[in-house]
Amino acid sequence: MEQLLYSTGQTVLDFVRYANHVEAKGKLSRTRLVIPGGKRIWKWAGSFLSAEDSHDDDNLGDIHTQNNILQLGEAYRLRKDPEHLPPTTFFQKCGDKVRVLPWFLRSFESTYGFRVALATMTIAVVAFLHDTQTFFTQQRLVWAMIMVNLSMSPTSGQSIFSFVLRILGTTIAMVASLLIWYIPDQKTPGVIVFLFIFVSIAFYIPIKVFRFRVVGIISIVTTTMIIGYELQVRRVGEAVATSNGQPFYPIYLLAPYRLATVSGGIAVAFFWTFFPYPISEHSVLRQSLGASLYLLANYYSIIHETISGRMRGDEGDYLLKSSAGRKLEKARHKVFSKQMLMLAGLRTYSEFLRWEVPIGGQFPKKQYDSIIVCVEKYLARSLLMSRTNVGNLSIVNYLSLLGYASDTLMNLGDGDDVSDNAWMHDFRRLVGTAKVTTHEVTSLLCLLSASITNRQPLPPYLKAPRPYSFTKRLEALDSDILSLRHIAEPGFAAFAVLQISTRCIVGDVDRLLRHVKSLVGELDFSFHAVSTAESMAPSRMPSRMGSRVDVSQVPSTSHGDRDKTD
Image 1 (cartoon, rainbow, N blue to C red):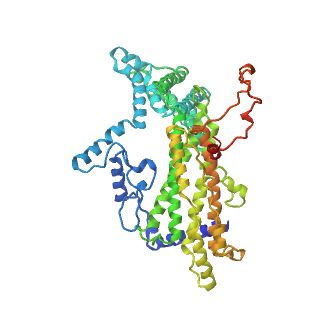
Image 2 (cartoon, rainbow, N blue to C red; image 1 turned 45 degrees about the horizontal axis):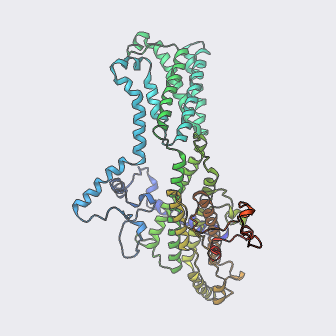
């Protein structure tokens, strides 16, 4: 807690200084429009024309500048394509741009858009045929056609949830329109007043209960259309109202008619949601979870490089955009924000699973939720208040703690006390030799991501890395370095946070490995001797065997000892 308060105080102080700097420049004295700069707009335009082998799917930072200060790894640049070498000639570069078009057409968004177009044309074709044009106009099928576009969603569970909410909202609108029309005895002033009261009350749903906002919006729009149509006919006359080919219906027929057409449009949308094949939350959740684990590996790798650079003291000047620390910080913030958005999407997909039509075996929702909990924040209480509360944090939170705690390592040794400088010198030697983070975690997270994404079993004998123990290294240098006499030193608290967070990360990665292994399985090339005492008849046993050996009584061995046993 002391380390977190210290880091928070430093951040708040920097923010106050920045606010004073902006105020001193006069930017806060006038109102002005804040728009993206030309550099940002140019990047947006360039990303639209980029090929499909870019690093955008990896959710890494957009670092493309080349300099002599920081040598970026391949993960920051374009991903290698096993089917195409990098273009060298002008013709090959033009061909790379042409490849963007088929990549766009076969994307998930284009497939979903084509399905919505087919569902819409199922109803719209009635208006394009000569023999059914009049029927389309008279029966107000345009309501059903519009409802198809509004209610369809990319996944089946989300679509069914939307269908139920829209039918519920239309039913509420039908009942409300009848009450609004007949309670004031069809008097126009009373109808307008009651409509205003209903709309004011219905806005409570999209404002306070945002998840069910569709019910409130549909009920408001539908009620306003029904009441508005009846008041329009009363104002302009029935002859003018029916001049477009639509017959006039009184409100006790128009309101149920609206519900019937909306239900018909939702029925068509429901059909095209499952035909020719449903896009279920199962596959979307699995692929999104695999992408989230890969993104977590990227985030951990950036944290590893950041901490290593700070321990070596070669991050450079943060005021320079070309410095190594500035670029790593930019990439870390970008990946962290995208990870938070992806985790919110995972929770959303997991909630929509209950609305799916179950086909086949039950979906392992509990295992997926356990994996999500290992990655995201489940219970956000006091940080490092006790070991119990630490266990409730997620890998992302621990990595954030590593990033914030390592900020203190950059300012070690700035004091004037000679004894403090001596302690700082020895402490720097200890920190420089300690492996606070390890690349094994990055490799393991990438393997877990690939297994879930591709539905492949994990490699055999895969184990989580062990936390680093610096007891022997501490005794070799100076056992007094981490004495309680130095507990007030900023580096003392920072290194304690680093060690505790690293151990917690390793524990969470181990739990994550077990959860993923329960989902996708593990390649097991070993064999096991099984007792045949129960399955083989006694008459078929060799008579020369004096006693029967039951191999099942032999204690089971782990993967590590199985090779020796076999």
